[in-house]
Every structure is written in C-alpha cells, then in structure tokens.
Length: 307
Image (tube, rainbow, N blue to C red; front, side, top):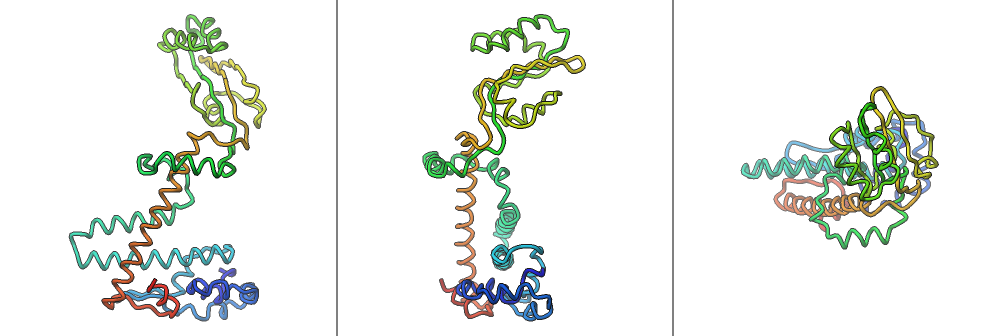
C-alpha cells in the first residue's frame, strides 16, 4: 500500500481534476514513509445508500501493493463503481421482487467481468460469433496487424499413433511421408481402424507446443525443428508415433485470422458490455439521486452524476 498516497486517492475520487492532482509534487509524496499522513483522509465517505456507505479506506484496502499510480487510480474507480452498481441494483431488487433474480444475475456478471477483464482467451472461448459482424472483425484484424503476432510457433500436419505390431505399418509410413489427399484417404480407410490416436490438422493451424506434448519425445527448443517441416517416427512402449508437419509459422509471425478472430470478437464484446454497464449505472445513479436514495459527498462527483 506504500505506493498510494492521499493525493493519488483524491485523484481517484476526482476524475475531472485527475491531471492536476497527479502533479509531480503529489507523486513524489507517495514515496513518503509516513503512512499515517498518507492515509489521513481514509475515513472520508464516497457514497451512501440507505444504511450502507463506502469510504476511501474500504476501497484502498482492496488495492494490492506494488501498483503504479495510474493502475491504482483505475482500480480504485473500478472498485467504487462496482460497489455503487451492486448497491443500486440491490435497491432496485428490493423494490421489485420480480426483477431480483435478473438483477442479481447482472451483478454477478459485472463482478466476473471486473475480475476477468485480462483473461482474453477465456472471453474468446465464450464469445458469440453471431453478435459481432464478420466484416467488423476483419476490419480490426487488418487495421491492427501488429497487435496479433504469434508467441509460439504454429504448424499444420498429421499425427498418428499406431500399435507397434500393427499390420500394414510399412504402407502407413509411405502415406505419412507423402500426405497427398489420395494417401490421406488411404490412411483413414486402412490405418484408422487400428489407430490408437489420430490428429488431423492438415488445414488447421495448431500451437506446436500442443502437438509436441502428445508425443513422448524430447524435441529441440525453439522454432528450428518445426520450421524444418519434419517427418518423425518414434516408438515408446508398444506404440509407434508418426508425425508429418506440412506447414509452419514462426514466433513473431502474424496470427492466422481464424485464431485472431475469437480474440478480436471477445474484445469487441467486452467493450460493448462495458458501455452497456455504464449506461445502466448512470441511469440508476441518476434515479437514486432524484429519489434521495443515493447521497454523494464530493462536488466533482455531483458534477459527474449530472452527465
């Protein structure tokens, strides 16, 4: 918590004067060892709704140590907004019991988004491709190519695991070494009935690490091995593993569109959901101010609620 100071905390509460309060003097004071003076105003209230209230101290207590001032400010605002949104929704639920289940579901979703905003892959897996137009996804992909680069090599090919004593293994080797469409058809008709496992990624990019993990073999580090488009045969126990790599993308290459599209779609979904949440929050905030349910203790916050 030593990286936070009262000046930065006030900047968190006062977005309209954020740049002013983040002056060099205030940032320098954050390095002070006098923690009592740093948090002298932690008892100051931000909001109160009914019998519940939110203070600076309760928000600061949820901010982990070690964050830089800008990240601390962003997290402070997110925590405060989360509390306010939850309390406003709870208040609405108490007024309309028929909406309770729906409102509580909205609260849970909002919390999950705050906790998981950085987990891009998880969001990508859950994104609905029908919601975001394909043209919009392609436009982002083409305009931000440098943002979507590979962190690990990707490959295309075929991996087959056969019993070591399987009949016709010599033919299987021939087909694997020359994976034409005709030979792939032969492979699937003749070899698959006896195969222990079969991974066909001939026309679908896969992370090289995922493929390598399926084979009990010590591969060289880095891109070099996959880049050589290897044809590997190795035996482990009673199994023979045959691998043919037909194409390769190195680390740093542009991510294939089919891999980048779910990530882009998830980003766009998250942005839309965030805008929707902000609209709901502002609507409920204004309603609560009008009926006296919400009290705001900062002139700047009062100006913020009118927008």
